[in-house]
Length: 499
Image (tube, rainbow, N blue to C red):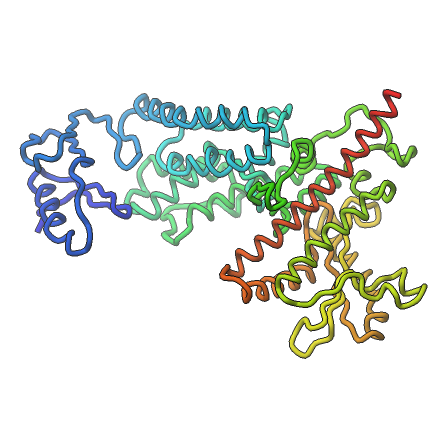
């Protein structure tokens, strides 16, 4: 019907047709004729013609006609290296205004959220699929990030390398378009033009990709044609990057990386900043949270904790110090948030059940929250909320090798301490344990999954949305409380030094 079209590719309602002027014109006529019955109409004002054909061969509504071999199709530059490089530079300059505005925000929490979702890899994903000269892109992202968070962080530092990892790998989601361009290009070829896989361009990209990954993650021709191939390749690159950071770190760094890369630990970074909903962080809290997350120095020359003169003021001590009331305040904030979710799910929860059982049992308090009817035919659930640190001396050696080791240890201890008392009361002990870096214990994962299902029954949201809400709010409360504990000790220490 259309003669010999050499090329006929579409992305939703955007297409590219290539061939003789007669075959392309015939294809346009077919679309114009059959399209309206499907609700599809050609917008000739947006159509462009490239080649040597006379424009008169096409509908008069088409006014854009180019003879040059340097052209742009569906947002991709096609031409020589100079043309493609200039295209990338002009493309990136289009977001320069946004980056400048982000640097002027007095809200680093909001700035980081916008940087990750609107101006970093998410904005340049398409760009990575057709050009490789992207080093300048990550440079401006790095500059914007360090300005927004007031950080002294070089592009070669381990902290920045971690920031470039995805959230699921303990990073900040500022993935480098230069690093992931090989995965994007190979994924694009695999899904759209597998017949081009043997070209020297693809071979070059394949060789470069294989240098970025471990031996067991290399790829060869023919390329797989499975869906999500680009995502799979990017994961292989991140696996190599993560293990490089892990292997070069101290035992404490390894424990931190394993904890923050656990499921839902990074949820605080995905919460939409909203003071109205209590999901905001003060500038000092956000700056501390990011430094702590990336393992950056926090107190270069400040000495000891104001509450514990024999303890150095570092992040681990600040979030575990039992003086000053911060540990209790953090526990209660998490407990109250979980209690509120239980109330919304119409579970009739009760706070601090068991507190009046007598002197000995009052000290144990087996239920921070008691849920009278939890599972079908099951006993009432005695929820016991606990926060533990993977950097404690009695678990550090294991936490540096096994993710969630500290949470598991605390869960076991809670069962040992409370199972007997709960059994006597006809309750079931349910320990909800979270590590200071945000990794939740196994029982907590099961509990929140069931809680999300109960909440779905009371709303029109999906279970995934509910789970994200639960983990997001709890994760934010945890990091915010940790930051406040540290900043309180920092302020007190500074007052003592000045006094």
